[in-house]
Amino acid sequence: MWTTIIDAIERVNDVLNGIVWGWPVIILILGTGLIMTIRTNFLQVTHFKESLNTTIIPTLKGLGKKKGEEDSIQSISQFEAFATAISGTVGTGNIIGVVSAILTGGPGAVLWMWISAFFGMVTNYSENVLGLYFRKKDADGNLSGGAFYYIAYGLKWKWMAYMAAFFCVFAAIGMSGVQTNKISGTLAEAITRAGVNGSTEMMRFIVGVIVAVVTAVIVIGGIKRIGRTASMLVPFMSLLFIVLAVISIGAHIGRVPAALGLIFSKAFNFQAAGGGILGYSFSQVIKKGMARGVFSNEAGLGSSVIAHSASETREPVKQGLWGVFEVFFDTFIICTLTALMFLTTYDMTALSGDMEDSVMSMSMFTQNFGTLGTIVFSLILPLFAFTTILAWSYYGEKAIDFCCDWMKEENRRKVVKAFKVVYIVLIVVSSTIKSGLIWAIDDTFNGLMAVPNLICLLALQSLVAKITKNYFDRKKGLDVKPMLSAYPDMNEQFIQDIQSSNEGMH
Image 1 (cartoon, rainbow, N blue to C red):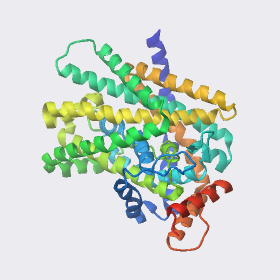
Image 2 (cartoon, rainbow, N blue to C red; image 1 turned 45 degrees about the vertical axis):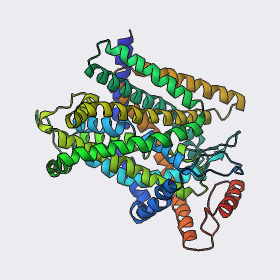
Image 3 (cartoon, rainbow, N blue to C red; image 1 turned 30 degrees about the vertical axis):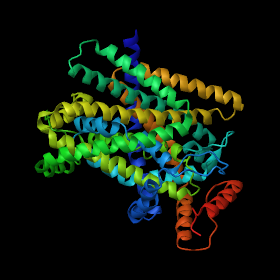
Image 4 (cartoon, rainbow, N blue to C red; image 1 turned 180 degrees about the horizontal axis):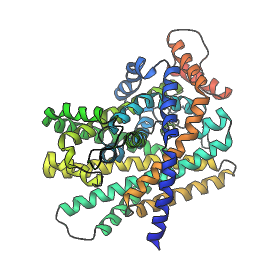
């Protein structure tokens, strides 16, 4: 019976996925990024240096400095907000997802990842700007925001905001399922390779229980604990991966030109080769590249803005610049290193699309670093995946909270607690389910979540351009009133905050 239900879900999802990731949505994603890029005067290029100088560089220098106790609004630091957001994006999609895209869509899918990321940098920027501009304070004084907030209070389409929040809840559950499934699969494979005999299903189940327990301990602490955990784990695991990937690519440096050649030549492969292993249709190449790109960097989903909205910064544009760097780091650094590492390690003519992506990902490390590679991969991937699970638990929590905004505060808290319990339980369940199905379902909900968000971004494009101009006019020394919040009382409070903390330009 269980098998019949799974098969039915798979068939329904295949139909939905084909619709959601059809040409209309692909055009909507690229089109939104292109329009927002034009409206902000190619901000990802013209202000990229500033996105570094005003975000990651000064924040890293200021790590360890504590906020003052006088802050009346509960929030997390800019770096913790970034770390939470990047932990939600840097996950299995950056390693296994890239390998999967190459196996099923060909090397050309990597170019479409880059293209979607280039425009996605401004899409993510725009989401953050609107997210901070329309965020609100909850009963505990915490700052809350996200796509559903600017849809509801900016576009004033409450029904669409509820729809976006509803899809976010299921995308969160799906994202958690993907990450848990890959953690359990990776560790079970590593244990088997180590010579330990036993049921693979049981090993996966045990790993799922452990992940669920650790997740529960951190999630109960809320965004502050999630932010602290992410800010500790993200730099460590990212640096470790980057070092190993660079070493691997350096060892095969002579193959890099051929790898790049495959990426560009296969990106516009309009006709599938009859029976050829590397023959992919043009639509398949774009679909896999775009779907995996969005799965990885989340630009257009309106998800990472939920974490960014909890930031202590009062300037929407400053947090928006974090979004530019976030997508750059996620796709142009992590995903690109994975792609080059894979393409320089293997002969693509000897591979096929039906190979298991997680097994191939581990083999990529083992081929280059032997047993050490297997051990390191078994450490890196679970950490990548685990921090993503933490971030998406918060996204789902805030989406549930928004969906229940018509309830009394006490009842809303109960519903949120119930979601956390369900989220934890499903971590265990997803550890043993067929991975391809979970990935496909989450792809579908990612696409469904993106549609209302992208429609709203297009509708509010003028406001994004206006807030952006306001910020840079003030940086030039012009005497204009800061646009920090859509709500007059919060705007005045934030103006006072930046004047007293020197966050502003005056």
